[in-house]
Image (cartoon, rainbow, N blue to C red; front, side):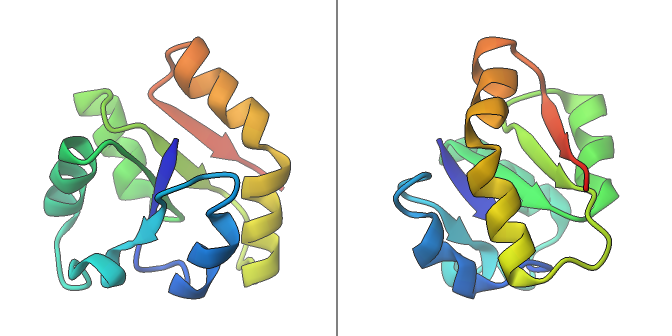
Amino acid sequence: MKLLLDENLSRRLVPFLQEAYPGSSQVALLGLEQADDASIWTYAQQHDFVIVSKDADFHERSLVFGAPPHFIWLRLHNPSKSQVLSALLSRQSGIEQSLLNEGKNYVELLP
């Protein structure tokens, strides 16, 4: 599973995610920093990414359009980079279980 971090998440997280989520990236690293949500959604769908964002707009999109792409909604209040990294790494197996094995469209990561 590879993650696509939304622009509201630091691109500096990407190297630390590679072992657990090989091939992960961030929208600015892919030239999508000015792209709208629909374009990011389509890119993720075409390139087999799971979108990660704090933005509720992607949650709404996942309810309307379903998966793919899958979506990880970070519901953490103003998280630091280390909190985001910790949430994604410590909950990796649960994320994969929910999205891949249980077929859910999205996963919410709560504090």
